[in-house]
Amino acid sequence: MKEEELRENINCGLCNQPFAAAGLPIFHRVTIETYCLDVNAIKRQDGLAAIVGSSVIASVMGPNEDLAKELHEPLKITVCSTCSIEERHCIAQLSEIANRETEEEANESTKRR
Ligand SMILES: [Zn+2]
Figure 1 (cartoon, rainbow, N blue to C red):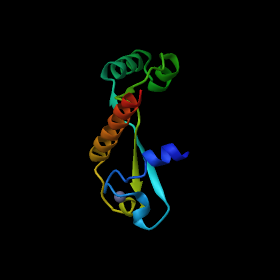
Figure 2: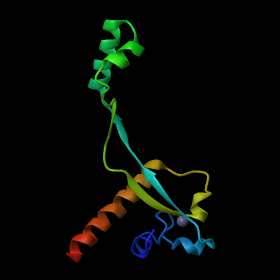
Figure 3: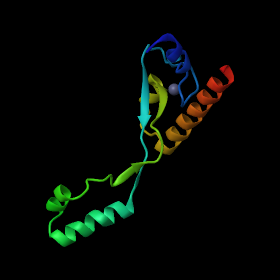
Figure 4: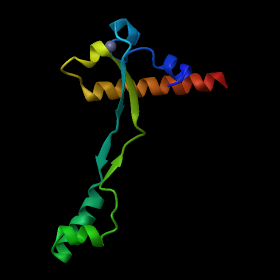
């Protein structure tokens, strides 16, 4: 990670403190990928399995289309070592924080132009 990227990720997304404030020179970059099932694709695959009589044969014969689709680009969030050892984190909260940070970065890069 180069200096500019490190500066952009200096604060923990959960406690909003610089990750080094935790006392360790270690931080985590958590990537969140969110998917939604494609019900129509699942129905098509299931229908083909019913016609050929086997889900294994249908998976080989079928178009091999995605049965779940990504809702948005993967989101990334910085987490300090203190926050990383907490037992409970809400994925929706992490996703919301990461989404906000992504939008702020996009706005800042637009301002620089
Ligand atoms: Zn933290």
